[in-house]
Image 1 (cartoon, rainbow, N blue to C red):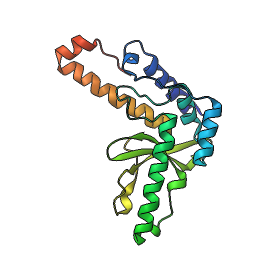
Image 2: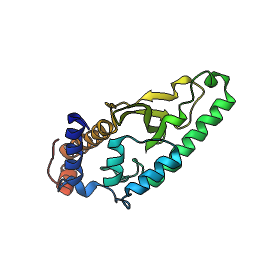
Image 3: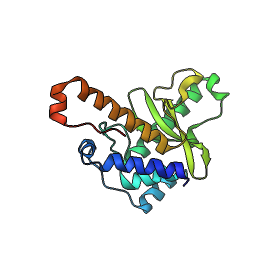
Length: 191
């Protein structure tokens, strides 16, 4: 991996292992082996990015402060297959969608929210690294259902780091604004 990716990996490990912030990391599910990741790739018929595979092997799902958003290896399969089925159904219903290339073979869901999946866009893979995009979970009848992720998404690590930093900054703002919150949760940590 290149130098920037290594720098991001070090920052991410720092966040997950920091004595103060590590208490906000959700329950880490059973960590997958290399064999489990190979099974995931076979099940989805894809080759995952190297940074994402590293993250799965070390953290497998929970994220800082919002443990239910990033997907574990088991959830990745389920959410990706559901997303692919939604895209297929929408393409069958709508002539408008059929004129666009079917993106589903290139998408792997890595984060879930009410409205969006954040997905690896494997079509952008270069040197084992790919971008992250947002996909509308409800896939409305318009071509805007695929969007770049709102963060710097040159790689999964870029996306993850920006997401964690955003969550930390929001947490720090809460600490600064509310003395009781600060008293309960402690001192500040800036990245």
